[in-house]
Length: 328
Ligand code: GYE
Image (cartoon, rainbow, N blue to C red; front, top):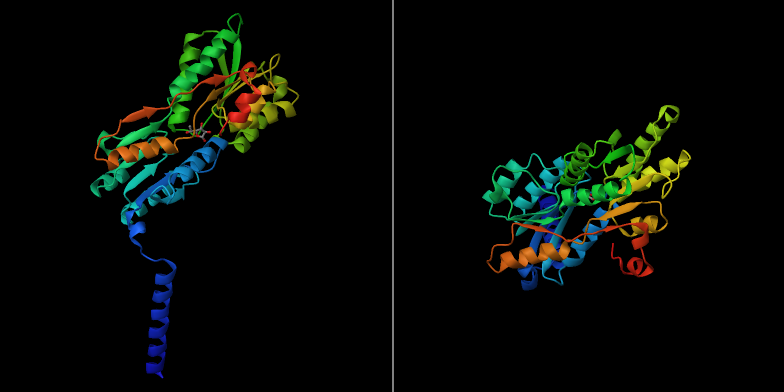
C-alpha cells in the first residue's frame, strides 16, 4: 500500500512540474527582460493612480521589461517587505516611491550590498549615505508651495488679515514637507497671515472631509475663513464638500480653496471657480524613470536629481483645449 501511495505521489509531482513548465516556458526572450521591482505608495489620490498608470504603460514586456509591482497601501513597513523580496528575487532595478523620508538607511544598504541600483521616484528619502540612491526623479515641492503663496500674496495684497486653514498631506512625506515649509515661510514673512487651523488630511478626500466637517461643526465660534490650503486635489474635494455642506461658498467672493496636482478633475473644479488655484504636479514620471534605466543600461551615470517642469492654474486659465489635452 505504502509503495502504491509513493508511486502515485511521484506521478502527481511529475505532472505538477510538467504543467508548471508548460504554462511558463523559459524562453530566451524572457531571460532578456529587465526586471524592475517597484514599490508604490498606494492609491490614495488621483495623482497616485495616474503615476501608477504611467509606470505600467512604460514598463511592459513589449518594451523589454518585467514589472513586479507592489502597492504599499500607505504603510512604510510594506515597502520594506517588498524591497527585501525584490532583493531575494534578484531584480535588476528597484524603483521606490517612498511614503515618508525617514527610516531608509538599512533596507537601501541591503539593496546596495546586493548590487541592485535603487531609483527613487516622486518623493525623496533622507539617507546618511547618498550613494544608496542611484537617481531621483520627481517634483520640487517647495517650489510648488511658493507658487501658491505668491498667488496668495497678490490676491490678498490689501487685506488686513488673511485667515488660513491648512490641510496637510501624509506627515513626513517630501510633498508634505515642501508644501508646508513654503506656507510656513510665507506666514512668517506676511505678518497679516494667520493659520487658524492645521489638520492632517493624509492626501485623501475622505479624511479631509471628516476633519473639516468636525472643525466646521463648531461654526458658531469660528473666525472668518479666507483660504483653505490643501496639499493635494483630493483633499480639496473633501474640503469643498464640507465647506459647502456648512453653507460656505467656495470661489471668488467666498473661500479661496487652493490645491496641488492639477489633475483633470481639479481643472474642472477650477473652471467652475470652486478652486481658486491649482498648482501643477506632474505624475507622468514613467518615461523619465525609463530614461534613467536606459542610461544605466548603457553603462553611464544618470543625473542624480531630475525635477519636472510645472505650472499653476486659476479659473481664467482653464480652456476647453486644456481640458481636452490633459492626460491625467
Ligand atoms: O501630490 C498627492 C499624492 O507625492 C506628489 O502624493 C505626491 C503626492 C501628490 O498622494 O496627490
